[in-house]
Image (tube, rainbow, N blue to C red):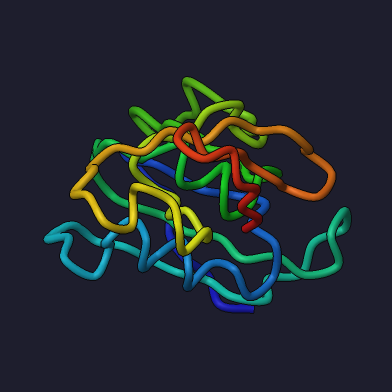
Length: 140
């Protein structure tokens, strides 16, 4: 197995479902980061079989809503002085604003320029959200 050094300061996004790491990498725009970023794919895991993992060497803001939408089982670890100081377990967000797009072609959000449409979780098992304007259901 490839050995990646321990972080002194930064963020570790762990327990990413196998093959979702690249999607998270893109959504967080980590390719634009000037910091050291490591994406490890298909890492052996006793709990998950295989998982993806992202290490970011620096203290950056990570959009937890985006992470929760892509993979609600992700764990975010904040590292300082080589030690984990905070562990955040995610879940599917109850409300999402400015990320999803309504799938109803007759929704007013399709004809008007509305920037931050809010969607409310209505079924966590099916990952269904409801549009605030037309009540249409949108799945991920």
